[in-house]
Length: 222
Image (cartoon, rainbow, N blue to C red; front, top):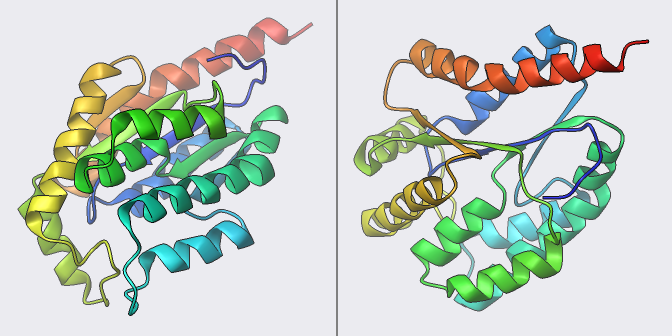
């Protein structure tokens, strides 16, 4: 990846019910404690237009989006999100912490829906160029345990949450395969343990990135 900005791009990935929202908040508290300017966002979404696309994607309506339609909508929302939010923040030196990004597309639309990896790669290159996250936390847990968490919320399930277990197993397998192929960027966190233990693992995995940032800051001092 080529980027001269001091901003750092962190993403959280994982299936439904793994605790991304809770742990994103934990990460931003770590950034606060380190004195780092940050912006938290999500995908699909992050801008008014992208949030409208998100609503289309998640709603269980009369018409089910074709798999290619779903994939194209994901990247349409991402293009807007990158242009309006992520790229400007990184250019200003702000750290961006995002709930899901393109790894989710490979997992859900690729692994889950069976869309061609080559097609996803073409769209990724078109929309992102060379931009990719600096650090990705994959919150991982067995599909059955994650499904139980979703059920315990007692909330109405969106279109993706209503998928069958086999779909989510393919999503999980895709995520883990991506982590194996990208070990320098991914940190796999066992989300099937008490929250305190999950966050201890997150803190330890984030520490090298924080120390590297602090070292750069000290080098820039007069």
